[in-house]
Amino acid sequence: MINRRQFSFAAGAAGLAGFPAVHAQSDKIILGQSAAFTGPAAQLGIQFHAGAKLYFDQLNAQGGVGGRSVEIRKMDDGYEPDRCADNTKKLLEDDVFALFGYIGTPTSLAALPLATKARVPFVAPFTGAMALRTPLNRYAFHVRASYNDETALIVKQLHNLGLTKVAVFYQNDAYGKAGLDGVTLALSALNLKPVAVATVERNSVDVAKAVETINASAPDAVVQVSAYKSCAAYVRAARKAGYGGGLYNVSFVGTQALADELGREGAGVVVSQVVPSPYTGNKPISREFAEAVRKTNGAVQANFSSMEGYIAARVLAEGLRRSGAKGGAEGFISAMESINGQPFGGFNVNFSRTERAASSFVELSMLTGDGRVRT
Image 1 (tube, rainbow, N blue to C red):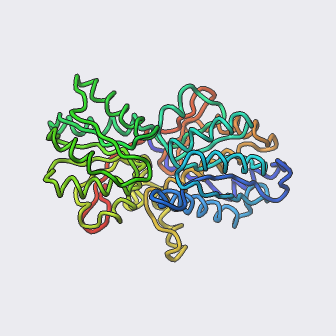
Image 2: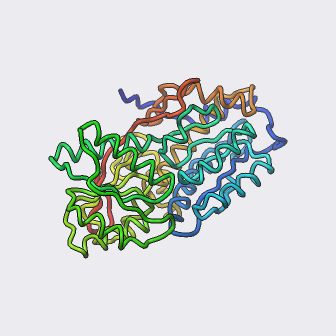
Image 3: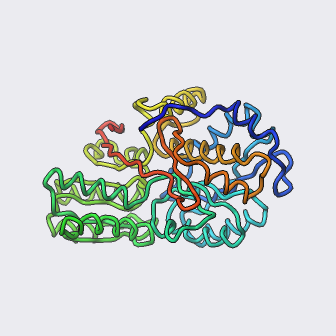
């Protein structure tokens, strides 16, 4: 199933020798990114961007694409939809080639209609929400698995362990509700439903009421669907209040950020992952990424979020390479649609004219008490 063929920078540059200027950018291909670079979700934006930039820096050092460098123009939205929409309008006014690496469901939901209206590709948002995937939008390309995929694996794992009393702690917005829907769907297939649900507001760590509500139901496990600050606050508060069951998170939590927040208190917390481990080196893409990080001498941290940024940049670059002489947004879209079954160092990507969700890859990892992640 896994083919170990790897992308060649040199081949990519050669394949783009005829790639024309787009949007009057003669020497650069400009990507626009609105993400959280400050606030309680900042590490997600910082890490994803660092991983993507790491790949593009390597690509540019090899001549870029057809002699043109790829640059990310980033703007901070603090994980707030209104700020994201304003940023997106500015980026579109600046005539960016594509929007790339947006962080979060509510922010991406604010941006995608703007990208669609402008007929600008919207590539690799850091979200697994089904609302961004159905109905199919020809301008949107999702590299990661969906929250339905992640929650299905979590519920399957709990079922295999004989744990049937499942509660959900979720962020009170489109992201949290997408995760709740995924858990509910997976449980319903087993003729079960959540024993309790409770919320936290976006960019808040006020979890006391949620802990009280969920602990009262004595669940076997709690699935958390929020950002790392609030999830860490919940873990601490729930355990202080006597909860001794399992704690499961979806990938958007930001695994390393959560581990950093919790420290020793993170031991045993489970997180689903949508990219291969950046730590084990069991896939070619993991070894490639680890070597690239090593060469930065500590400037880039190896973690799941930066790994996702690196893979997303790699996929986008392949779309540029395949565009060849056609160029432009429409040529790029057609090229991305042709990436069907290509392995990127063990991470398979499947796009087509009728498929915009490239991967269903999900696996589980666990935090240790020393700030590490075990897969």
